[in-house]
Image 1: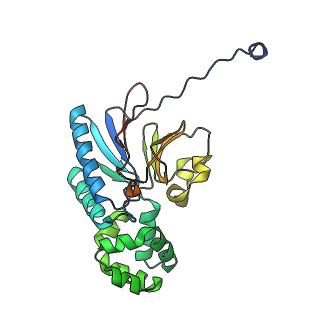
Image 2 (image 1 turned 60 degrees about the vertical axis):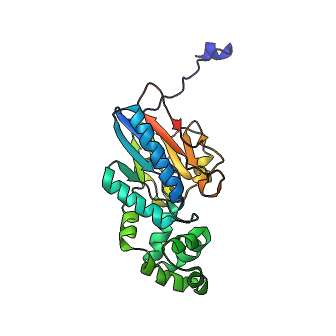
Image 3 (image 1 turned 90 degrees about the vertical axis):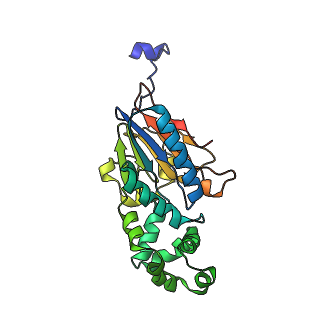
Length: 258
């Protein structure tokens, strides 16, 4: 080894190969943020793509942040309740926006201010609250009113989401993971809220991490992670980013964000 170093002879380490479980086809869907129109379009394209590829154990993983900012959070939640009940191949991760709504619904008044700032107004309007009524109440009053508008079935649905999903060499989370900790040791707050400590980490993780939460102009494909929050709620033309993973000799992903 010393001899090789003296003469500048090094052996390159081949890139790691990441595989999904054999026989599985996984569609990972980025942050929807209340865009029912984009969700419907994407589900249609997923169905067509899945049918074209032939038989497989297909599942769709939604990476969280279904609600807020866009105009139809109610419609998004209702559509995904129906989809999970009908297909059985849908899994969902809890994002920081789901967490905020649940906390406010359960009486955490301290969370109401942040809920309001990050798109809660649009969410409540989609659940039937008028603009005049929303603007007339203070944050404490808003927290008390939310259970009158958001059905308990929707809250129970949001509470049922996973915090992380492991599939072969891939780990699906909403925001990311804290470097240096096993997935079982991760704090829920990091899985839903972490940003720079995760996105700026250059070392290898135990898995290839697929995440949303941090907006980038396009799919953010790095050596140790792939980010698919493309800010679809605010872009024009807007599409939710979706990646396809299936077992093969090397990692395969099909971008459906174009």
